[in-house]
Length: 126
Length: 109
Image (cartoon, rainbow over all chains, first blue to last red):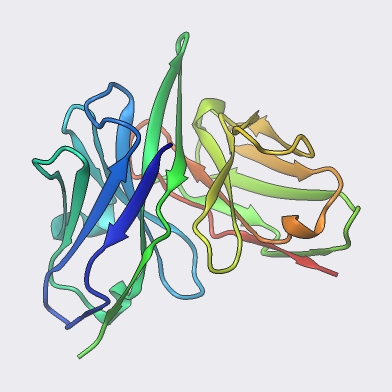
C-alpha cells in the first residue's frame, strides 16, 4: 500500500524559510518512473504544481517559484523535503505531496499523480 | 508555460443527469499528457483519468475522458450524489511546469 504524509510547521513568519517533509512508503524513489511531486492550494483557490523530484534525482520546478524552491531526497530514502525561502502571506496554502508516476507504454509516456498525502496547512503571518 | 482553461467554472446539475466538463490547452499537448482529478471538500485530490481517456484504478465507468490537444472533455454519464465535487485537469506537456486548470465546481441543482 502506497502512502504519503506531509509534515512541517503550521505557522511561519514572513521572510522565513519554510521546510516541509513528505514521508512515504510502499514504493521506492530509486525505481525508474517514480517521482514525488509537491502541489499547493491556497484557501478557496485552485491547485498549483510546485515541482517534483524523480528517481534519477533530477528536480523540476514551476517557473514563477523556481528561485525560492528546493526539493531534495532525505538520506533515509523514504522522505522528500521541500524548502521555500522568503515566504510571504500569499504562500499561505495547503501543501500536498503526491507520488507521480511516469509510465511508458510503447512509445507513449503517461504521467499522473496517483496517490496523494492528506496535506498540511501552512499559514504565513507575523 | 501551457495554460489550461476549464469551462464552465460552475456546473449545476441534478443526480442522474449527464455532466460534460471542458479543458482547453493554450497550445497542443499530447493526449497522453492530460489528466483529470476530483477533489471533494476538505480532501486531497484523487486521480480520475490519465492519458486523456484511461480511468484510474477503481474509478467507476460512468466517468470517461476524451479529446485531443488542445481540447479535452470529462464526461460523467449519470451523476450520483458523491460526484458533486471540484474537477481539475492537469497537463504534462513537453516540459515542466505541469500546470492545472482553474477547476470546475460541479454542484447539485
